[in-house]
Structures are given as structure tokens and as C-alpha cells.
Amino acid sequence: MAILNKPDKVHQAIAWHGDIPITNRYTAGVAGERFFREVKENGKFMGTRCPECDLIYVPATMFCERCFAELDEWVQVENQGQVVTYTILYWDLDDQPLAVPLVLALVQLDGSDGGLVHYLGETDPEDVYIGMEVEAVLKDPAEREGSILDIRHFRPIQV
Image 1 (cartoon, rainbow, N blue to C red):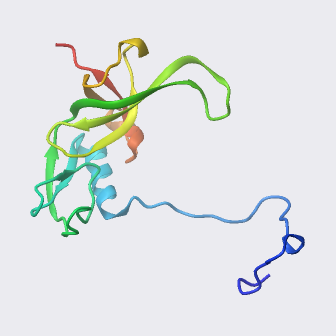
Image 2 (tube, rainbow, N blue to C red; image 1 turned 30 degrees about the vertical axis):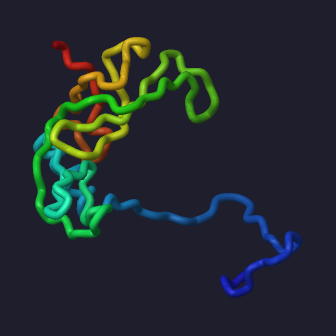
């Protein structure tokens, strides 16, 4: 059925049985690609700075969401920050109970105005709190692939 011949009645809908032969590739974009490359190759977290608003975006973006300025200044930010919010997961995506609860948190990295959503590890879920100081735990350099999973998790900073 051509795209111009869209069904407008339920009885005209067609079902496709079996696998749909479609492939695609996801791109993180220019800013995301540089962010992941820095994590992979150098173990560094980079953000982009808005010269107008003086905001540092992590994850990096190419344009400021407030003033729409083009962002071409890259700055390194810390690999540690604070838990802004979190949730404790007891069930997986298939609605099966997890053997051990997982903690998913939004971490605002020091020196940035943004944050990363990632797992917290090396802590009991009951001990997590808003404002908790955490640091990134990266995979060994040989294991990194250039994705968000190059960060194993964030763990509490022992003071």
C-alpha cells in the first residue's frame, strides 16, 4: 500500500506477519559523539558552554535550549556530582522481579548545569538520598566502546 493510500477505516488495516525487514542506525549526533569519544579514549566528561547564558550542558548539545546560541566551546567537567533524584527498581522490563534491587539516578556533575541518568552501585538502596555525593566508575579502557555503558555506575564518595 502506497503512503498516499493510508487506510482510514479499521477494515482497511493490513497486518504484517513475521519479521519486518527493517534496519536502522542510531547516531548520538555531533555533540554526543564527542562526549562518548572523550569518555572512551580519555575517561573525561565534556560539556558545551553557552556564552550567552553561561550554562554548561552535560550531556553536550550543539545549541542552547534557552537562547538558541550555537555552542562550540567545550569544557571538561568533573566525574563526580550529586544525586538530584532517583528511583529504586524492583522489577525488570519484562515485569519479572529483580534478584537485587537497582537504583537509577539523575546525577548532576560538578561544574555542569545538566546531568546523566545512570545506575548507582556499591551502595544499598536504603542508603541513597537526594544530594548524595557520587563519582563515576568507568570500565577499563580496553573494555570501553564509546557508549553510556562505558560508565559502569556511579558510587558514593567516601568522605
